[in-house]
Image 1 (cartoon, chains in turn red, blue):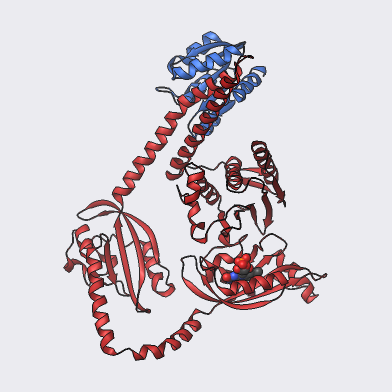
Image 2 (cartoon, chains in turn blue, red):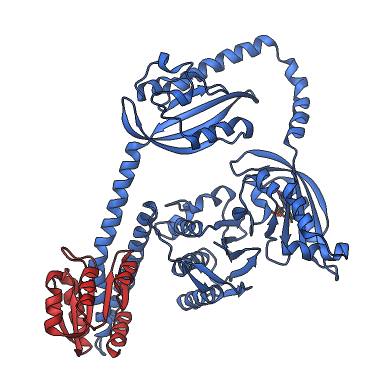
Length: 510
Length: 119
Ligand SMILES: Cc1cc2nc3c(=O)[nH]c(=O)nc-3n(C[C@H](O)[C@H](O)[C@H](O)COP(=O)(O)O)c2cc1C
């Protein structure tokens, strides 16, 4: 909370009761964030619990980020420009902007932003105050809609309703997934054929029963119950929840559950739709594939070690008078052996991550020195490129140094690969609240909003990139795993044609 | 203990042959063993200045060999290597003096070897 002291010192002139202030911040329903205007891209250095609640993100995922993550993919709103102008001019502003919670739910954010200035009039921080005004907006919109609604004849609507009902029923019955509809007491209103088939039960045994009493109580899991009970009041769906259970009739299975509140014609009905998918077989196949990957890449490393050894001996034993052609062949072979080695390590990394075996060996190390040395190494490998470092953290970070070097190396080599030959790559490090933040920026082609979340997917490669830079496309996936294993977040800020900034944060106290 | 003599124990003949070439080229005397069950006896008989040990070998793994060496009071340093990711943790736990991940760089290997032999 020391940031607050700093901000309010001047305003009051007197000593503020910090404890009282922080209690107010904790208790209010209004979201409050503070950003540091002295750091690149105005990262959030403080947020109160209400901001976490409104946005659905946790503090770990918020500190160090720019507030625009709340806009999701909705980046063409003109309010955004209003804010950008106000920030550039160091002025306050007030907008209503469409924002999205972590689960993707839209909310209208009534946002006040005001600058905090120091004695010299320089803007040091911004304070943002957020209120979720969706319900007000909604009734506004509904009022506007009402007139046109009325013009629709009752007849038309009944017809439409009938059609959509039939339509729905046929979808529900054809789909190859088990579906159950419940009322707000979790009493089952209907279950589709696939459900009855999968669990080898009749409609009579199911309809009218409580979900938690079905079969031998297989769904009566405290954690699941808690999530289900939160669907209606909070509108938070249950997403990809796994249940492994010894089911009556069908034995031990792994089921994937998704549950949503049912919304009909824009109105919330207090019903819940539960979708159940049997992923037993899929998981087993996945496991076999992972085992295979792991064994195969391990086995391949042994002959590769021999090849690398002989390769290096060949370079050492190269006769003085060897022809340039011969030297060239040896050098090329060496390079491709290295490439093979790289691919194999990636393969091994993937299988390790998949089996959850990416173990962290945490030990305190000088974070700034690690960054400097990694950049040095990269400069050595690409001597014709400029890499500029700014900022410092002065932190002895307790983490897995070699894995974090791997992350930074990956971001740097991507930045170099995907940007024009003469352009500069920037690295910025800072300590933000109790987090470290690292940003790697390039002046490359940028990444479209749609692709931004996907770049961290396994085997994902942006189409045009695929053609120019062969490889497996798992580097960023691995980075993400490593950073999230440290409790941090990794993300990209980019716009097509304007370069990209890859950022990650790491909590200092873990 | 002979400070020019290195014993290598690995079940893979390709690696043994390659290491023999590299180490002999550097002027070391090299003794090879491809069965970890024989390793302890051989080390005792040869008294090398350094032992290079693979970790994953059939019947008796490298870390078991190392533990037996320690129990026997054998003083020479041991460098372990492996392609497996938990290799480093296994080597550390068993008390190896150094660990290299496969595939290793020759320069790195030779550096480690000469450093360990100087001790
Ligand atoms: C203190 C502060 C709070 C902000 N809060 C929000 C917010 O809650 N929702 C939002 O969409 N944008 C918010 N923004 C605006 C974005 O961070 C960003 O400045 C805006 O999108 C314009 O910049 P851009 O064009 O670079 O994205 C906030 C900005 C500041 C400085």
